[in-house]
Image (cartoon, rainbow, N blue to C red; front, side, top):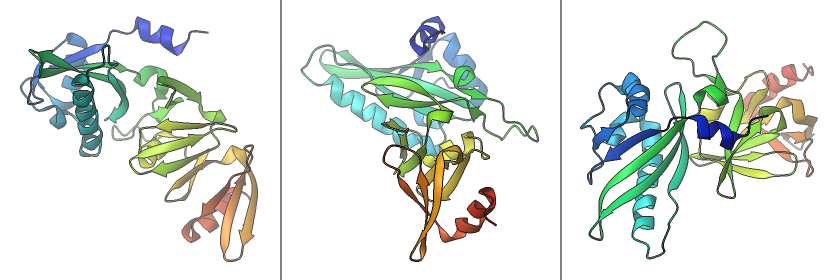
Amino acid sequence: METFEYKLQKFDPGVVLLDENNNVSSMNNVAIRVLGSIRGNPIGRNVFQLHPEKSREKIQWLLESAGKAAMCPMDSTPPMTMMITIPDRVLLIKVTKLLSEQRIAGTCLLFYDLTDITTRPCEGDGSPDRPRLLLKLPVYSKNQVLLLDLNDVVHLQSDGHYTNVYTRNQKHFCNLSLSDLQTRLNPQQYIRTHRCHLINIQHAKRFEKVDDHYLVIMDDEKETAIPVSRSKVQELKQILGLA
């Protein structure tokens, strides 16, 4: 079976160069094909205009972090890496600052379009506004990007604009928001029980009522108790065949 790293080696990366004001100065054909088809001609435009508003805070953090790393006296500072979603695409972005005479002269964005190996078209009405469903869940672990099998994910918990992803015995970080993930996961398998929690119903072990609160007990090693909002109780009971 081909590894994720091997597949990346076969990809042509997109390359975008920004000037010191974060305006696009040039890009290669891959970047033009991916970004140009989404946002029109990007040359001369600010990089934030190429991303939906919900992704701009992450892009800003990525650029600022890369800038701090570039001015660090340590040699061989690794590029900053982040996974983002833009309409119908999933991109793995690496960012590094370009220096000239000890000052930042611009930025190089290198990205890989992971859409075809991590997603599939959404079945349904064929609406172009429907995001593609994830086949694999991209997470970070020890400075590596891992693609988790969706059946191995037990539950997900919101952490601001990011998400903690739990398997039976491990915790992973995903820089996509819980809302983003919910729109890209199979709604028959992944159920939103609470504004901060999304569960894989295949790993639900028990449904309990404690005082006035309902909980779903998952089948991970810790038997994690996931809260169920009052507005979700009846829906979850129907899914579990309890109503």
